[in-house]
Image 1 (cartoon, rainbow, N blue to C red):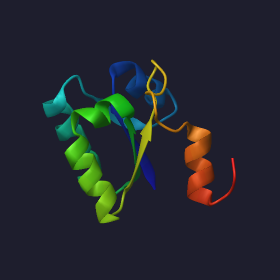
Image 2: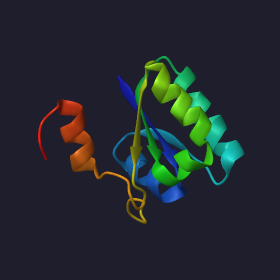
Image 3: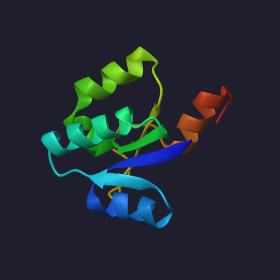
Length: 101
């Protein structure tokens, strides 16, 4: 199972240094193209997309999440930090595992 990162250039570069393939996106058209590339790659098991990039294509991200399809899509903060009102990685992990934070 492989990971694929979608987000700003710094985030994609950072994940790239850890061996994660990805594509940077500066606008909704690029974000949707990168997101679709990740979803269509049969080797990708987890798509890491920054919150700000996901907001550019929110309807498509929400539709994928609601479908329960594979690969798993996880929104992560970018270099600017998490967006207001969004759970942190610890809260997301605790929720996914069904344990208290």
